Length: 385
Image (cartoon, rainbow, N blue to C red):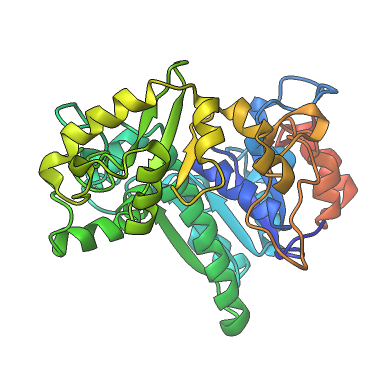
């Protein structure tokens, strides 16, 4: 184990999406994260090949029946020696199972109890079902994604689930762990995707207050594809390139490399009334060459340029290859841990585990007597794949 969180023990109550992502981030940084699955998820012996879900990487996996009192007690015994627990159920579920924050903090007063929901632990929407698209809609983000004259375009589930959710859960847990070192007391971290998404929009709230972003004109502003110098353009081969030539010196470089530096129509860069027409002209120009030809002209310059790459292409691009931005443990290509540390390097030290694959070894290693573990497995309160 390595990384800046080496030595911390974290329990992950199995879920989907942002919870596993947060657990992966913490594990990537060196924390020992144990994923707790439902006993019913174990269907038989663990296959030889790793689980296919890369979000499970780096963690051992145990299976407990949390509807069985012995399974609940086993989890609470693990809590006694953990630094943090993270869960992603709707409000009240952990309490009904008998492993809510009050019970866990009574067992371990220094525990950080991280909670991941879409709407938060309270509020009118708190108990309603939802998904990323709904959370970013209510947070005031979705309305501003999309081109002029078109409906809002959901940005996959990057903003709510992973940016506003999992990333903030990991951040909140680490903040609370740091505070617990000083105070000796744990606390609950209420992470809501609607809250995280809202704070991701802070700069655009600033632009709105300064009159630099018209919230009623989607796709017509500086950074939402309204400007001709901040957009993607199709090339002659059907591939795309991206431009972000905002600053005057970068815009001048764009004009020079496209041969438009003497064109008077392009001289008034920030005249928004001309942006639609100038965008049409740039679109016509970029369709005259392939993506590779534009890369030969603009890569490694100050245009603020990059080719628009698909996932498989990104893994093979020379810049990403040199930085090891993508790794392939076991031959499975995936993003490498980030960010980078000069002394405590983060790494992926385990492949994705199957449900209940490590139940016996983890329970024993975390201090539960072997005979008790045998009894738990025999009764079904715990399950070994």
